[in-house]
Length: 367
Image (tube, rainbow, N blue to C red; front, side):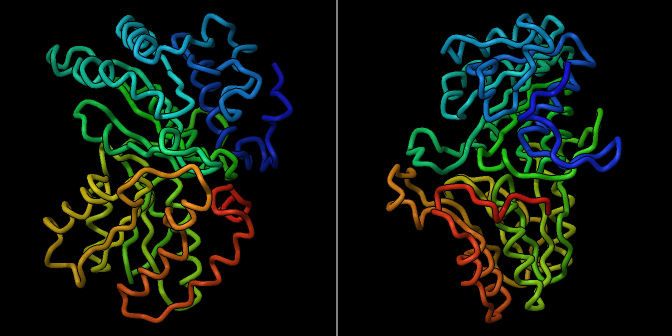
């Protein structure tokens, strides 16, 4: 079956590489997995709809049939329980929630069943379930549709938690998640779906639990995740022209975390700035600062810093969220402060040319 027009590759670099969007990369991973293994299922609210969950599931039902790609009633706890049961009987379900906020109704199934199964049965059987959840900000989503609760899931032993930042990693990490023997929470920031990048054709997997060193430098370590990695890219690239070279680490996996990569970087730079898309208190950023302070104390030249969301819900009104989110200029400002350097960062604001709660072209990639 030919690819729908909205999902065709933008630019082809030979037979094995293409520049496609993050959403297309998700679609490619699902197509690859379902082609390889007839036990892979894809279902959830809106999966076969005309918009295909931000374009990520377009054409799948036409290609693989309604028995393997289907919609579900609005009953998140039940659909997750069905997925766990199917996984225990040899299937590899991929459940899709159009918002992480909706998936909160399935926490009992995820925490008390999927995450615990291997432990309770002596390691003999896991639950190969992948749960896609879409999170993030913008468009006046408001307090109940914009939550970034990755720390909730990362707190649970038995769950793996993945947050891709690039199109390449979206495909590679999703493939690894689908074929992992245990449950994986796969978190997609909605602002990343139109981001473009080079993606290889075929079964190209990215190992879970391995961070990605996107930029190299000896002045400071910047650790980021998901969309915050894109803001960090703009900040560190902007500062490079001012003689500041940052080591930018994209976590990719929040459980397990690649501690070796972070520790090696901090031992070299002596400074740590952690970026988080969630509220500050109880966030992954706090866990990273606590761990690095314990293991790399002698290497630190200055107290680590964190940049995250405030400890109150995100408002619906754009007027109330203009100063709510961490952006590239804030990252550049804090890097300068940690290095005791006067840096120019105001021009980063001027590059946007779009309202603060609407995705713009400035971060679209490739990077």
